[in-house]
Length: 330
Picture 1 (cartoon, rainbow, N blue to C red):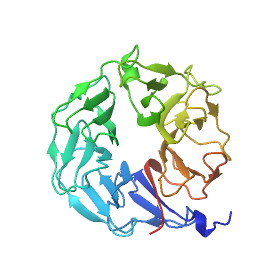
Picture 2: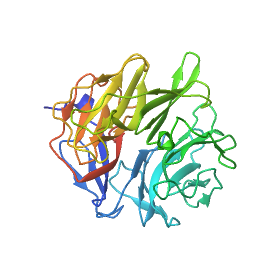
Picture 3: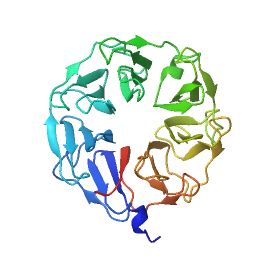
Picture 4: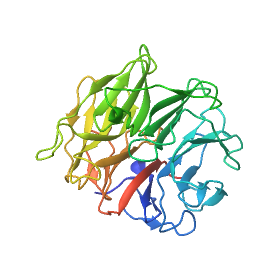
């Protein structure tokens, strides 16, 4: 497929065991980053700041920043001594950012130069071992409100910029409903909707997390579970919700469930090649309108340039993908 200049953009891929990869022509060719996050390391978080620049977290190393769309990287913090899972930005303060760890949340007020470990409501242990902070989102309408989703540990909220935290409790009838993989916020006509995903599917709340409505996705043929395992969720455009699903983790097959009516109904999307594992992560960018990148656990990358109506699979495949970014050309 020939790419025109109007659809040129940069895709970043963070992996487990193979570091970070960048493509500067919409996925046609790739560069394995050698001077930045360790080329054989784990990059589970890769994200564009709303204030500019790319940020990446590498286990055993720390926080990296790039000001040239991933070409060159600066290691700006090495204070972490645990696995690093997520990063969140204050949309109103370019000096404040948050890092989700295993377990917990750390906060920086100086652009990532230093961090403090916050006293949160996230548990130190869970039924599978140590919880992981999978997502951190700062409310775009109120930067004092910070949300952290946890695998396995539910959803947690701070109303004072991270100084104190509240555990929202059980989101569903079992502990594994609190195995929160994906989390996002969606503006609606009546306020803000919260969306979380877990092994049981997608849950939505219209009252700030006081109550939740669960939607279970249909199982895959031959799977031993009676519902699809769900991972990342994004609401990139009005009325559109995209959920990554699969038969389990890492799984043998995956798919995308897409709603175009604000979550009232979902359709299992037709992809040009059946994913080889559970679909895991998604990326969009406000300056690349209509484009969304979706990845499977075992290295496949799918791209849509028409608001998720049609998809193409990139030729290049990777090992285990754990994070993805999309940015406009420099």
